[in-house]
Image 1: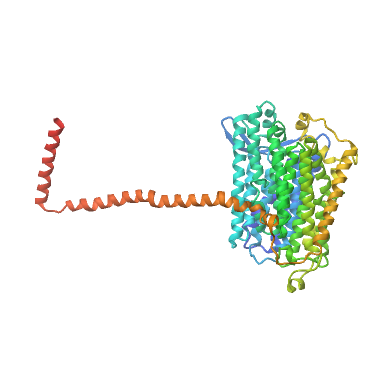
Image 2: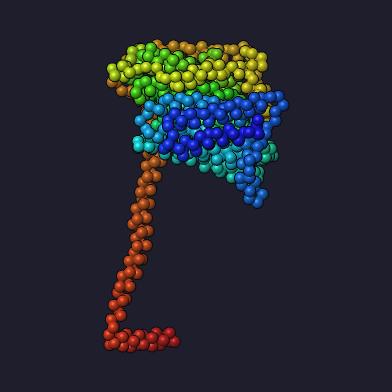
Length: 633
């Protein structure tokens, strides 16, 4: 079945072409069926491939389609790699992607924007690019998909292009990602110089013989790319602004595509990072700092999508923390569980926004529990999962990251727990202000409140089930011997890194139980505090002050970037524009005007009068004699 791997990205590409080229002729129903159907077809093929990979004795396969670049000794094939890591990501991308496409068929049909087919074409291209990224057997093919998701994010964030604010958000995402992508590209060039190839097999085989300084340089450049794509400090500010796009796009960006690309790339390159302890430390510290910083901002956001956006930035920080401490399986595990509950939360937020007629401020909501029963219960399950309440999926993946962090450094663990407590608080602040208490919207909004159609609620129910049970494939040994089936499944991918680990620290079962359920108990207390405080929230005109105002304004980072980077660059560009217009154009245009003026004056010499010509001839002869005289002397 793995020989048919090319079908997985081919189906979304065909959907993009069909909906894109036929956008003026196809009905919305046909567009929906084509757009969702191709992703379902990819999921079915991905599932069959996963079942094949899951069989004992499976060895990774490289499926080469054609030579992509062949220059001198450099040969880069357009090839796909089928192994445990890529097959797992295929299921996440196509499975969650299909649910988001199905959701979009109902959510976007009611929009006044007429470009329905264009939306689905972009969505299909987005999935195609992400599939290319995770299937590539070398860094060049990965980079093609990497740039593809960057392009699609620009197109979808700015989908409503008549709104200039949305266009600015799209440009911001595009430019900030290009900063990171430059680092990734330089890393690829360095690999070619060092290894003579970009194939994973060749690069990873040569990593052990490569000086640590070179590996550190390469991995840091790759990590810069990951920082941009996966929204880590300082390249994170584009992701909250990406909420300008339609809500299903936000779900796709945050759950199944784009932001997980950086995690996948570092996990795929695990052996190089394991051999580069300096880079690993930088990755861990960056991830932890991002997790905490974004969580503080989420505490005071009032836009329902912005809270979830900063939550994503924070959760991505946890994934990088796991990568930095060498818990590669834990990072991938959290990617999977996060895909379930974050897609659920975003699509649940979309259902709320749909019912509230595009209202996104949670201060104007409240009491939606009785109007949106399915949305309410699924959203609650998503909040419990991301908060890490047992036995939901987020509990197992987050516990694995925290345990690995503790083994590396107790400071990592303490700060990680602090971030988990803030996560629980801001998520249940969001839940309580949205679904509990009294309705705070307008009478017209309340009159039209109703549960969303089946095409919206069915994906919510499926994702809620996955958010509850999705973590059961990663139950730690302390709770169930051999229960961490995901670790066993991914073991071949991380085998080389595992063999290099020198730490022999192990926790006692008592300590593991204490850490696991002790943190869960504290989280429950924090949830109770948030529930009690915000379930009776009353809307006031009072403004935030002090640290609350700072957090509400996102630590003024955007303003800082604007003052330190944007405005100086705009001033420089204006100066260069005037320099070009006045000085450069002045020289060029002045030279032309001088020649033109000289020509006009010189033509007056041709008067047609014989006397004038004789005078010129005599004068010229005298001048020649004078010049000759002085030349000889």
